[in-house]
Length: 148
Image (cartoon, rainbow, N blue to C red; front, side, top):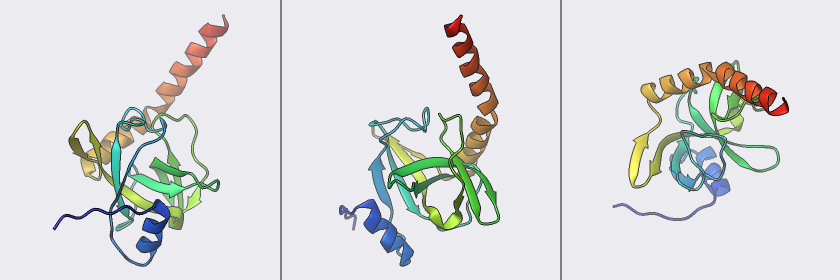
């Protein structure tokens, strides 16, 4: 039986803390994960954290201002996680691992579903993150020539 019901992300998080492994899907509402995830076009599905986080995972967490964010894990040390959006130049504020609510497992765009929680996807993410310096250099060169 395939049933769907609407719950808020807060309700989903509460159920997850109680041990329920319920997936939640929502449409991306920001550009911080471009080009992988596109605002208004991609729907992602996340599940509560069910394994140890790995560098390159895309995770869901809440910022202190209450906004929900899907960003990629950059670094994990002890109980601290640092994330960054694929289109961002700076890192998010480090957070305790318990602040990560879920792991994004797939995205949907134009009727096609792509698995995101895989070794290949994480490898792509690590490659993309390793090119961050190149994106920053490109941005700085563009700024330099705009001023000239």
